[in-house]
Length: 355
Ligand code: NAD
Ligand code: DAU
Image (cartoon, rainbow, N blue to C red; front, side, top):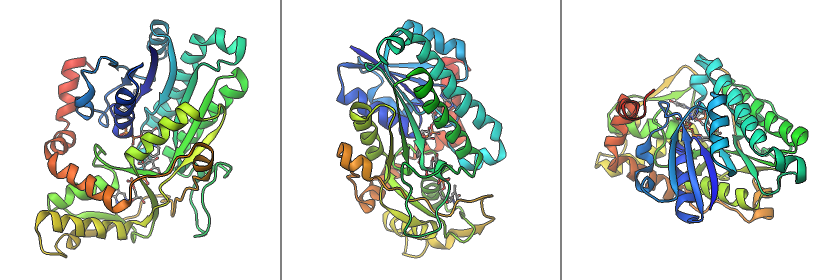
């Protein structure tokens, strides 16, 4: 059985990746390494927690000694690295936390893999191993020309502490490829949405606040544009790239699905009014324009042609269907929302696993 290490598997995207790998690949043993920060919780993986090919490991990627011991104990065939601090607004108030987890944590993980895979790296470039780094389109900065898209060759231009930390981690991954022949692959994805998304991010925050009749904070004038992809489509792209991606290569992943924030919030209001049996127009009255995010990137838009032509991946879900599935999930999982916003799950898992 091949052992695969997935970091950040208790978070939003990571939980969908873990579920996919556990269910699709019975010949892999999936190790989910997660520190269970405010953003990670094992409720996201209830349905696979008893699978015989799944093991949860509570641990912190900033702890190098712990990682070395884990790699010494298990001969990992591959690493899929998602663990990160992921929220731009938090990075603006506490940049250093992003440097520590996203940069130092990634370098620790690269070092642990390098030590454990030393023989393979020296002998034949470790073609039987893979270090897959999951990154973001935010490393490319912002777009102004509506006809422009982010390509894999677009110059890095991170503009927030979050994207600067992710850009830095991408550079380290590439540097380990050139310097130590570490077999790596990187993907840079656009905004994800779907079940289990922590309600600090735009879509789940709006759904949560509409349910609670709370203000819907739109930054600036709501003119910023994001390219939205359903989270299971991202997990499928990661699967394809993990298995077929070329070593040393970068793949952009995106939904070709651009929305201005205000239009998206209005659409969510419409869907929620319908679902909650409220008269149309009720929820949009909750929209409140608030001070803009500092350095707010205007537009992200991915060109995912390489992934399509080389590896045959395309998004499968239309946005209308994906949003409906997402809204339905939050409506039937209100207890999850209460528990993540109150920190109940965090307390529960701290008692179970310790701090
Ligand atoms: P998330 O915040 O929902 O989850 C992050 C997970 O990492 C959590 O489970 C958390 O407990 C864990 N974690 C944090 N610090 C850790 C540490 N020091 N050690 C071990 N585990 C730790 O994030 P997400 O939205 O699922 O994003 C996952 C990855 O995908 C990130 O690397 C992010 O940069 C990238 N990404 C996200 C998006 C998006 O739209 N959400 C898009 C493109 C790329
Ligand atoms: O592009 C990929 C990135 O997408 C990921 O790398 C990040 O981890 C992920 O958080 C996401 O970053 P964004 O900053 O684009 O996502 P967020 O949901 O925070 O915001 C989406 C847009 O909505 C952005 O233009 C800011 C705006 N916004 C956000 C919030 C939370 C609001 O107008 N009001 C809000 O309350």
